Image (cartoon, rainbow, N blue to C red):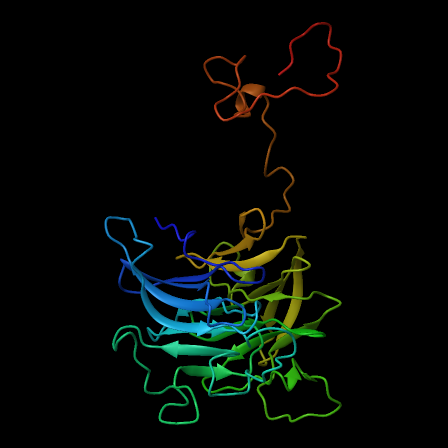
Length: 349
């Protein structure tokens, strides 16, 4: 479908192929967020947002339309997620530029794109247009692409398919990880605050949008934002925002209590490095496991021990050829064990 291995610079840090979004109405058009080498960047790393078009199911990797580039000052917090909102605009997340503690104070600087969520119109303009209701349209001291700011590393965000609400997991610094419900023009405090705590100071300003949830580094150290569950397989999760921690593999749900308060509940301790979530057309949610490339699906838990019965015969296990049960089924790989058990000269496979 598409091979970008010759174009992308992963670098020693957090670069690579970081995000993908299909156009909501044009089936032959998709967008990528990735990094390439750049001699003009102190980190030799440049973020790219590009448009690709398919033809006969094949995409030419050497012919993207570049929409936006951003030279990265460091090799971490290089951005990642992109997604279309219900308004048809493309939303783009960039971290604060990296290092630690936001030394360039970029997240609070509305004249740079670092530490922000952007919103652009890819359906008009060349290469894109600015939505006229973006919060900083018309200001000479700000980037018109900015939708929200004061973010450290909003690695993954998503839209609630029912309400259109924008949720983001913002990776923390030393103490806390946070979940934010993103508002247009909202300032989420970094690097003045880390979650609800003043960052590197005894006191600080308090005129920021507070996270809807946070957890300390005793529970995890790198939040991965997920989705509000709107599937049908697990009715008990309807309306619950799912998120995880990359370091510990814990998965939580944020449950509304009916009074406007969201209460976190630990759902699973997987031990996996969860790098991302995904949602299918039916609203079912998946977890992406970093390292081995596994994709896991959320399924309802069964308390019925007899729900899955062991087959009565070996021929029913699927491990043997149906026409010749002395032969293994296709796909099975024979192997020798180091210390085979004695079995009176019987052949073992």
